Image (cartoon, rainbow, N blue to C red; front, side):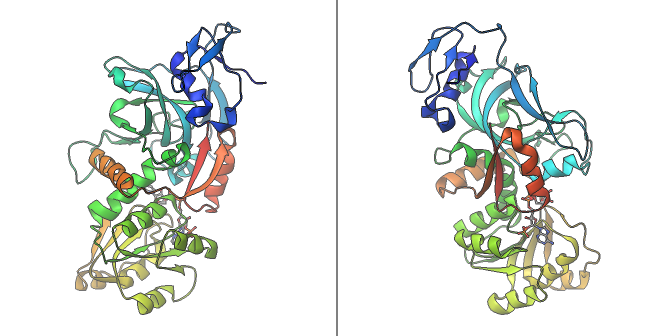
Length: 387
Ligand SMILES: NC(=O)c1ccc[n+]([C@@H]2O[C@H](COP(=O)([O-])OP(=O)(O)OC[C@H]3O[C@@H](n4cnc5c(N)ncnc54)[C@H](OP(=O)(O)O)[C@@H]3O)[C@@H](O)[C@H]2O)c1
């Protein structure tokens, strides 16, 4: 039998089997004083804390570049003014986390807890925070200080998980302006998978891509987390969505997400084949860049848009500007999204009851295995860490 010593009543709900943590079902929960579970109001048993200390917080921390993250225990967080401490139920990986471990990101500071995506329950609130947030089930918008310009983020914009400690931990402290109610139709893993990828895809497809029903849309590298959201969003709008991947298995999985057809971008002539099968593309959503970008210029319909949210394979070595101006193409960059984009993305996934495509769920302690899987591009959709 396992027992837990918990001193804060707000934490109790997190350990109730009725609130979804099936792995703890049947576990006896010991608390520091008589109390009730916040979700089922069941009275919990009482024992004194063994050492009078609060429960330690586990965190996966980057101490050294190109070395495994270390799992360590830290003191519980106290929220600053305007912030809340969220007891996380799950976090999710983004390629950004991997880039940081490799030193391929500006302004790296160490030690730092990585992780931009997370979902959990508000456990503590700081000064100036409405008590209404207490014990609420939330997801986190990982973009801070976007600023007032809808067209682009301010110079103060920063992303949770570097330089601020992120979500690969039992707890995170976050401004309440970044908190949103967890979508009711998503479980904890799906909720954690949503924020950064969903936000980036939403802005790419709608604010920048201006997708319309009936458009031909190409999403490249469909194994990627953002790419799977882009496919789902464009499809829900009524577009015909085509995808590319290096993996036949991933192309098959994309068909399960209602992609119209898929092409292997490692095969010669894939772009010509796509064009001959289905015509030119009104919108292309890409994060690969590199030499393959020339095919995207050829595939774009006159007046078409190519939206890039990344350049995984680096910049293109050459760019045929003659084709760009003659075909009146729009080459567009995009990064994450504004608070309005985040709220609109949540409304869209609620309206369309969209579930993020999940790859695998790893225990927090096995976060390095998840990063290795991302390094090798094995995943289809989002990888999740379970707390
Ligand atoms: N600007 C932003 O706000 C923002 C936000 C999120 C991500 N990003 C960037 O966008 C990229 C993807 O991020 P993610 O988190 O979605 O990563 P991810 O889940 O790791 O996706 C990476 C995918 O890229 C695809 N890929 C690799 N080489 C390719 C190529 N030559 N042509 C087409 N596709 C290729 C692979 O797809 P297959 O496995 O199907 O072959 C791979 O699975 C990263 O560079 C990331 O830094 C930027």
